[in-house]
Amino acid sequence: MKTFACAGAIAAFSLLFAVHATAQSPAFKCPAAGTVVEFSDGSRATWTGQEERSCRMTQKDPQGTEAALFWYAPAAIAWPATQAWADQMKPWALWPLAVGKSVHGRYDGPWTTASSTPGLSRSLQNIVVVERIERVTTKSGTFDTFVVSLNQEGRYQRFWSTFRQWYAPEPGVTVKYEYNDTTGVKSSGEAVSIRR
Image 1 (cartoon, rainbow, N blue to C red):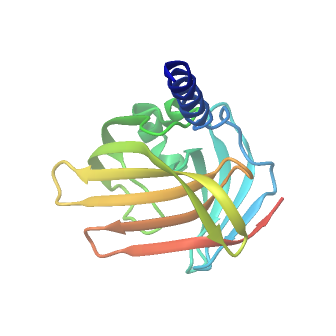
Image 2 (cartoon, rainbow, N blue to C red; image 1 turned 30 degrees about the vertical axis):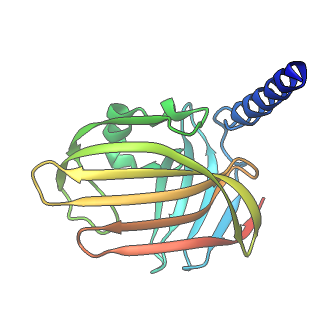
């Protein structure tokens, strides 16, 4: 009886270890240039190429404004003018993705977005964390995803934001996202089509 219990415990441990060992993404890799993800809110992400530790992409927001961005990891996206953010945060350290892995730091410098005032600067505490693994179904399919969030809090201004993405290692893109902040801005979308 003890042998059976011991064998059962070893089998359970082996199964637990195997599940834990597969709860990690492959190494960093950009989607193929030309990959397009259309979202339910009318936004679109188009992947245009890979740089050393980032992917180049063009993002169209629901209002139709397009911007060139650098994508480092789920929820870690920077405008070319805020490259210093990535240099300070080092979001590429999240790869390979694994639940509980995080990068955090303070960013002081220019902050440029499509809607910001030129010359704006910010001082932000940032944390990007791989929260969990979750299976999600969208109009473009069912995916096993890593849920990754970027939480930002203003050091001198009363501001916080949370940007959460559901990243599917296969096909290598975000398939769902949510954003909200203290100014009342909220947005969300799910992939309705993925073209490669």
